[in-house]
Image 1: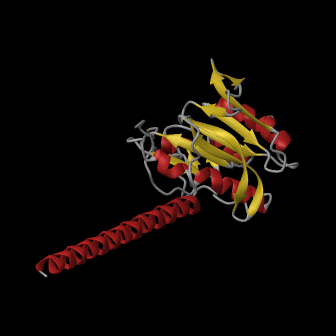
Image 2: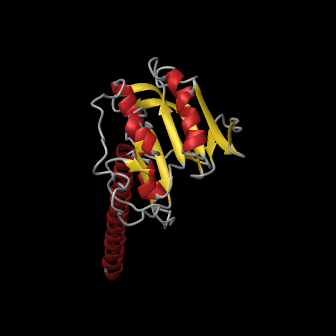
Length: 255
């Protein structure tokens, strides 16, 4: 786990950088739409179990401030990404992501585009992720225009566009996962969603999908148990019939 950036002991007349408890963590601005909020949840929550495989820790968050410089703090000019993932960090609750406390920035960032934010996400924010935060992989996706999606990976300090793989997906090498467009129903909304999938093609399931799988498994187990019970009853009945038949034949021979 990378250690946090060390801060020298307090010196008279010199202020220490603010901590996450001292920095603003809410600008009062809601998500763009309900679909943006649902899309954010669909990217965050199914990813959490996958990240448990990282022994050094990990964190996935969304719609949270990311502080990377004191100049940014003074200007309050940068709202954090919609979804971000950081590897090799402590698993704990955070109010904001403060680079000088964590010792690093995010490894993966996803922005959800809208008419109001697309230009910013494709321009100024992309440069911030490339030049200041040095985010290894950056993706964007428009929940209302799923054809507008792209991915980038740092290559010698500059973002290089990622090609689609043979299944039409964008690959995150940092996470060992694919981002895929999936047509289906999530939270009663049917549309094209952006989802995580394994490289083999299995979607990272939602809690509802996991429940459905478990429910189906229990149902199949019950059906197998009932079938076994019916077979056992039929076998016992057949044994009883044969015994009765043999007993009848023995009685006939006695006469």
